[in-house]
Length: 356
Image 1 (tube, one colour):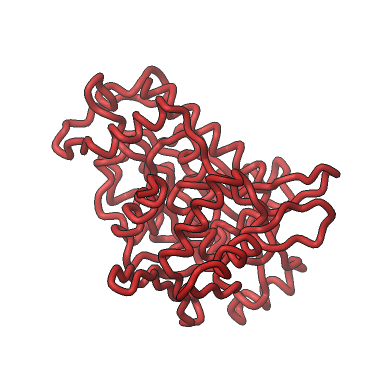
Image 2 (image 1 turned 120 degrees about the horizontal axis):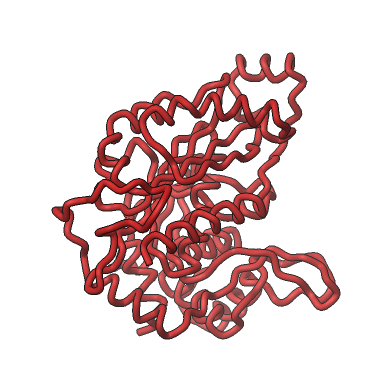
């Protein structure tokens, strides 16, 4: 059986009922959305998703397998047909060709972006910008080719489960390495990226951070903050929150307060998302830091990220629309994905240095 497909099915077999944020948000094309993995039906050999508008998306296992095989062969393709010269055949076009050669296999072209999302979320592939021979950019999906050593380490990690009874050591994370985080015979504990969100912008950034860790074979989980009961099995906890009305969300403060003892014994990082950060200057930075001090009462992060968010009028309540009107705030997506990626890589480097 295809090893990457085994990884895919193994990952999603544990995720039924979970809500995912589409990693296509990376491209900033207004494709940000949430969808629920309803179930994997092995009898019918199909995976069922539910979109935010409650419409169902049903994808056959065979098309997932074909998508993975295609990426293993082509290495990189555009997701959907691009109206630019010299763009490579897209995932949609290639799957349509393969589907035409198979009996009893259905492909709805509207489902192709979800096929791509699922493959990326499973860690088999990653989204990014590709370039044609003439320098034109296109939204691409590329297979991850890991060195043999990394693949062996990942296999060992899957076969070993860290003990939740291991006693954590309280070490200042500003200096030195994390004692007890890793021994010669045990892999590092996983990374948690947890967040709260109102309209999905912070969730998109959380998934982007996860992709950065996954690119180096570091196992990480993304969870809504309301779904996190225990942080003790993680060696690094990254917390993301939007800023509304000059405050971080109350559930973030409550999470930090509730888990402050456990969080003090492991590495933490925080990122905040706010529309005010689109015009960053010394004043907005200092103001944001003061707002974030509410979290700092309970945890001491190794680093603090600040990112501009997005504001879409259709997502706003009447009160927020009126406030935006008076503040003369423009609608749009102001997230800088390069800046977000650089911050995620920075946290990853700190993490790897401390567990080495």
